Image 1 (cartoon, one colour):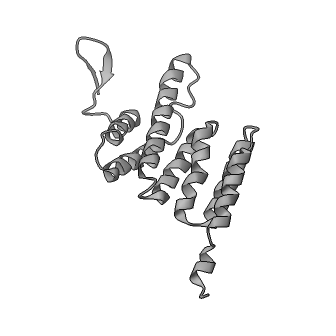
Image 2 (cartoon, rainbow, N blue to C red):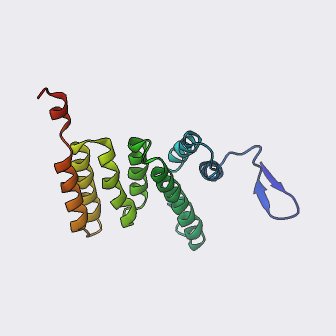
Length: 170
């Protein structure tokens, strides 16, 4: 289980499985530039592996840098792919942005991107839910959506008919 080859002792990757290693392998796959489906599959694995901060119960200073690096790498991967697929698969893009938002509630770009993605879903309900979620999330850190964001959402709601009105005959 433990090996040593001309250096420090390490775990034998042939005999031991470590979520941290799996997460970075999936991050590498997500960054590989392969098809969106390949990247989405890798991100799905990351989502399953990354359930919270690395070694969240460890308070030693040495863990802070790797913990933050992993969190940022996961956040960046979710955000980058979401923006890549926003035009072709807005629903999946929104799911990725929502996941990114849960990882980093204080970064305004990840929370601002979410309302902009919802219009592609052509749903007033989605725009309303996103603005409510954004408002709640920002309130947790003592902030609120900008006037521009609120106005943008109101504009989008005025432009988009409700799903019911589209389904009903004129």
